[in-house]
Amino acid sequence: DTAVSQTPKYLVTQMGNDKSIKCEQNLGHDTMYWYKQDSKKFLKIMFSYNNKELIINETVPNRFSPKSPDKAHLNLHINSLELGDSAVYFCASSQAAGGPGPQHFGDGTRLSIL
Amino acid sequence: GENVEQHPSTLSVQEGDSAVIKCTYSDSASNYFPWYKQELGKRPQLIIDIRSNVGEKKDQRIAVTLNKTAKHFSLHITETQPEDSAVYFCAASRGNYGQNFVFGPGTRLSVLP
Image 1 (spheres, chains in turn yellow, blue):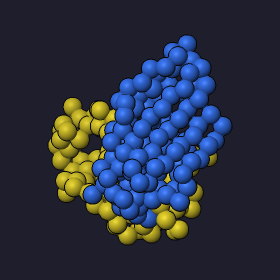
Image 2: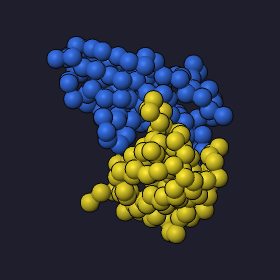
Image 3: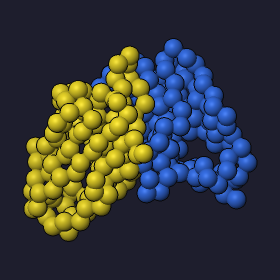
Image 4: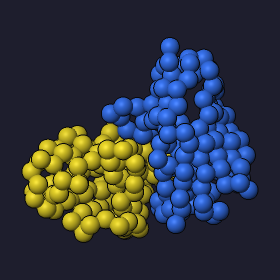
């Protein structure tokens, strides 16, 4: 069983469209994250949710809107896609109680904007 | 905020040799330092981590050392094998919820047979 699963794996779409990426974790973790990895492989945190509450919202355009219906799910909706949004988006989860700990990553969603 | 630097950006070693990757961080309150390995087209996977109350940790061929005074930590891989070839990321964190969880820019390690 995949611990952190995200769908779709690949997303190819036109500029200006709206798309969503879904993420689910079955590790019982209370915190989930979205990361963006650009073409230079830099990994940058976008959002962090703890028990459905938004904790971190880095400097991300408000075209990106995360939603956490419960602590096992964190989805990412992107409006009006731009060329610069092309990247790999990783979902991750961790157990926050007791201090910072290892984050478990999903397999990533490769988003390509035409 | 936290800033993590990582060196070298690329590293080539002969199979069987050792590899060392170094990271420095800026926030003295950071207390958790993981290392991730990312193979081409795959997700980052934790290979070892260390907390600020420990100076060294070892797991088979992999070890991490931490110098809190100098604010740097290093990954050591001994007896390298071709399957160790990947991009390695260090990170530093002090928050429970990912606050100040900052990754270094990565080191591309190539192990030559």
